[in-house]
Structure formats: structure tokens, C-alpha cells
Length: 174
Image 1 (cartoon, one colour):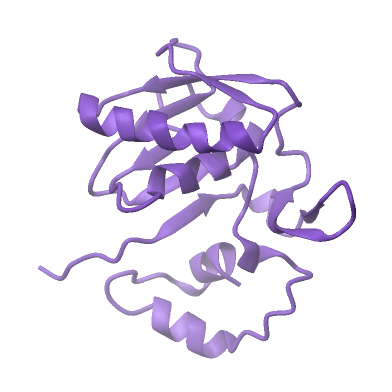
Image 2: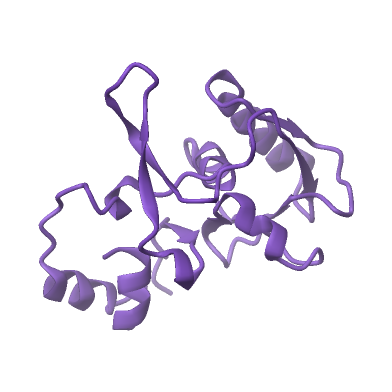
């Protein structure tokens, strides 16, 4: 069996694909982050986190890396495993790493994960918590100026191990 690559996929709702905005520093210059319009949690929010599964060691990695955002975001995480938690984490090794973006978590049924940490290499959990607080991938910034060779991107992501159709590639990358 071919080894699957470790790829993060934002779970951006289709209606929001083109509604990205660049985040600005208070003093002016752009940051290296973008957030989809309307996806950021209100400043000072306490986001409740529930682990659906996962070993205590994996859960601890997620807790630790979520804490990285406490240094730069005006948000707090409460790992209280509440049944109505905004962020619900699974550790399904067959489902990759992904997260719904920001407040989209509110629209996901409470019995479903809003984040999956199928692998925990490097800063994977920290990366996914970035999405959970409302940040998207920089390559999706319409002001980014990337000159995509769309035909090549579509062709390459249609191959193993992704097997993405054109619509999936356009949604996640282009």
C-alpha cells in the first residue's frame, strides 16, 4: 500500500471560498495570515474543546500546541470535554489532518468532529488550531499574486495518493 502524504485540508464551506481577507497588523504591514470574512471568533472568546477519542499522549500534544495561539490571539481554549464544545477533535489516522475554519464549527452537528489530527508530526495540531480560530492557508489569499499553472496542479492532484477531481482541487488549492 502506498504511503499517504501528510496534507492539511481546510474545511471551507463552498459559499465562502472567495470571501478571504488579509489580516493586517495594527501598525500597518500585512501579516502572513488570512482569515475568511466572518469566521473569526469574537475577541476574548473562550473556546471549549472536546476530545472524541485519542490517547492521553496525543491529547496532550494537541493541548500543548493549541497553547501556542494564546501568545498571539485574544482567545482561550478550555479543554473541558463539554458535550456542546465548539471544537471537537478526533484522531482518525485514516482521515488526515483538517479543521473547519473558525465559527463554521458552530454549524457542525455536535456528534461530529470539527477537527481531525490523523498525524501529529511537527506542529500539525498547532496548524489545525490556527484554522479552528479562523485562519486559512496563505495560498488561498486572492491578493497573494500566485501565478498557478492550473492544468499542472489539477493533473498532479488527480494522481495517487490524492485522486482529487478538478472541483476538489479548485476548492482546496486554486
